[in-house]
Length: 85
Image: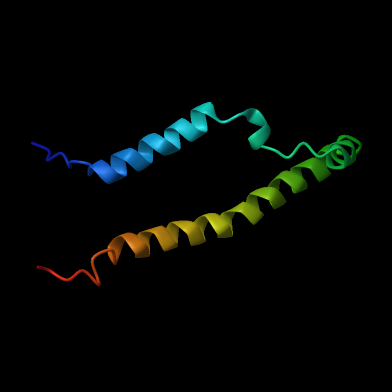
């Protein structure tokens, strides 16, 4: 029989908030819709578009990993300075 882990209320609230942001955020938040960028990208070849998309993805990975690392460290050390009464 498999043991099921319970999710803490704080984690459940965070997941609910993240899902709400993803589902209900306007599509304009997904991209800046810069007219100059759009015309430049539209006038290039498919090879350049592939490189542009790869570059954007590569530039997103380090900030994402740093924010995840910061969140994990903060979560693990949340009770470091807690004084029991």
